[in-house]
Length: 151
Image 1 (cartoon, rainbow, N blue to C red):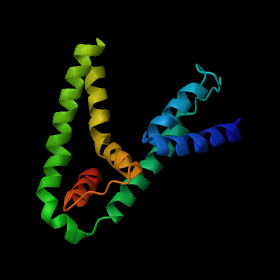
Image 2: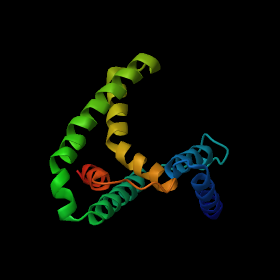
Image 3: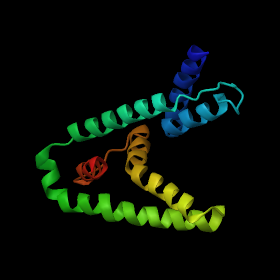
Image 4: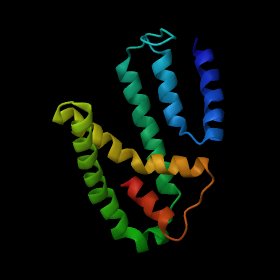
């Protein structure tokens, strides 16, 4: 069953790249469909393993993002990146939480948790879409986003 999931993941990754859809979104959808409530009926409850894999993957992503930017590129965008990583993320979290509360009829805690999750991953999602469309950022935008993502 694991090999089938891997094959589906590889095929969907290539298809998502051609369609301009973030690969992460396709993997989430595959996980939902293959899970115990979906078509695959795969039951998995090892939350500690998932947490460990998630922490390792996040560490790798942040580490590689930090390695791809040189210090001399960060100096001119330091304060802009710092404000984007703090004030920008805070505003995005508040707005997302408020809008989710208005439209999803959920409690405030759940909505602001959703806002916090979305706001902290927005730069990674932007980079994924830009990479899939072969769009390069000009001037200081690339180091600015990399620096803000690493913070």
